[in-house]
Image: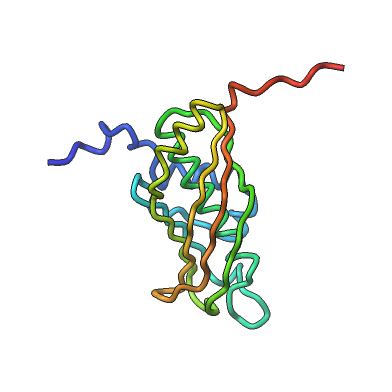
Length: 166
């Protein structure tokens, strides 16, 4: 029998948590209509409607596909660390993207938890910073429209050296 959700350590870090973070931290996400569909230790799924993300051809704008994928990686890493009470900032360092098919419906960015998650956490706790490569697929229905590969960096907030005062 599974534990009631209110007793699980990650119960407060589901889709609602990510939606609040996306809405408060990324004004672009609100304009795009980004919605956190699912968020747990296995995966993160972000969705966005086509209308605010369409180009002049009626398909998804490449920049919107890219932004949704970047946000999915940020969401996974931010949630992963928050559940484990690691106070860190997460940013994208580098990425590659392949546009495979036009998307003409609701966009869904899907990220499955990477095998290197524990290594990422260990590096972060040991050195105060860590890096992890994340793979995100952006789908239109069952069609894979975009493959995204991003290297994300996290930096623990409490280990930062303050800037010297003038």
